Image (cartoon, rainbow, N blue to C red):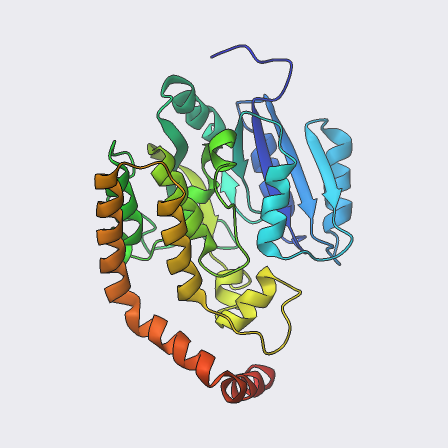
Length: 315
């Protein structure tokens, strides 16, 4: 590897909100990495539990940790974006307060990025675990990924269409990325599905590489946002706390526009763009009913919102 000992080569960004139950395990997992030339940036999103005390105690014992606290809750994705903007390393990795990594996670991903300049994101295979670190029986393997292809339109198709057969969990988001490439994306927007749009943009900018070993353990528990906030309006307010009552939410519509913007803002040849739009048309056919429903909701939103709000409050 190149000698860059004057600064951390890798930045690990950990956004957290009220994570006292599992935070220490996640921090210990990161600090136990065999690759040590990294900084750990923690952004505490105005937590009201013991998160602050835990972070300050760890920061006092390890100079690689930089702890920041938001005065008010800025929203889930804004907090993810904040840790990236504070990063200084050549490579960047997001980390969640409830996940675990094997000690060689960063080292093996960085090794790939160092030897292959075409790779913009490197990630390992993943297992789902519960609160007790037990591996869950459901298979977490994604569809056969073609994001290593040299053709941008194949990588695009693989992320938006080939994922139909199994849910696309967007776990590549927790891989190690080139920071300068990630900076060319819109990062994470304040809407459900923004992680899919970000990964698509990254795939249009370069190739992915999957380390064929299980080095990442994604915790699947009742309090994770995707489960606790299944209602799209509730999830939207988690992503954007400033969202006012009655504001219309277009989950699929925002994703659709995000895909279009990803194609239009990437330097692709005419053939590649045509192929990408063809694949997007296939995606549109699959989700057209959801898009139509969102348009209908827009037309009758005042009535629909009052009904939905009563249901949410009741539940």
